[in-house]
Image 1 (cartoon, rainbow, N blue to C red):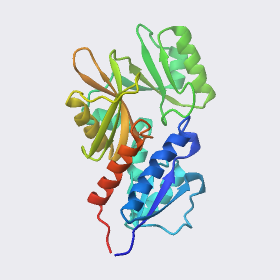
Image 2: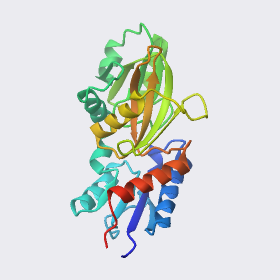
Image 3: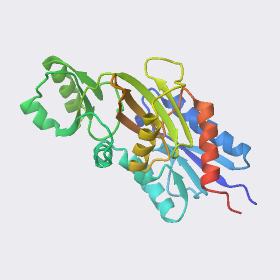
Image 4: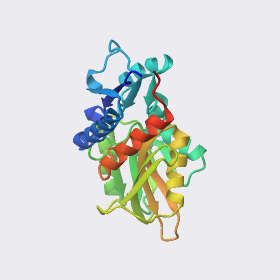
Length: 271
């Protein structure tokens, strides 16, 4: 049996604000785990990816740019296994993401996409706390996610989005409660969670949390994923964000082992 060729693709630096080393670490650790299982692996920056590269058997991709995704779409059409798929990564762009999560009936904060031009002319009735997020991709710089409680804060946030050329804004109601960061692989193959304000992992969580995470990932098509949820005082779990292939920074080595085991069990190496 010939060792399989696995190509890891690092996330573009623009899509990895403050997380470049952490993002690289989880991909490197996963490739190392696969190498220990007899796979032959290599890694490349998404910025250096070209269609001239000889396609491998597997691709583990953290890339998010349209240019990179088009190359992976070509590989996928020829039968190459890409994790996460180009379709699922495109589904994580803000507009399709919120649509798919709402369509799946998942518990989300009240959310609506509003044209920036409308917010600039009509404003927003700031009677509580709202979260404003750029409506195209996840945050790529400071100010791309803003908590707004006053008209002054609203104006600052809108000016930022206008300066960044963002056309649509996701407006979400604030959900009081404890924010939890979660990480998962497949449908329950690996799962861990941490409070956003602490370093210790959660050892006990509501049964709804891993189920909600897996349902959200399935709705989008992700196999390696992470996100944020709020545990409310009423014992409810509300999903507030979902990401493709996060850094797993708080559980890197455990996650790398989980990802490698999932890949080998799900997509057996062929001779």
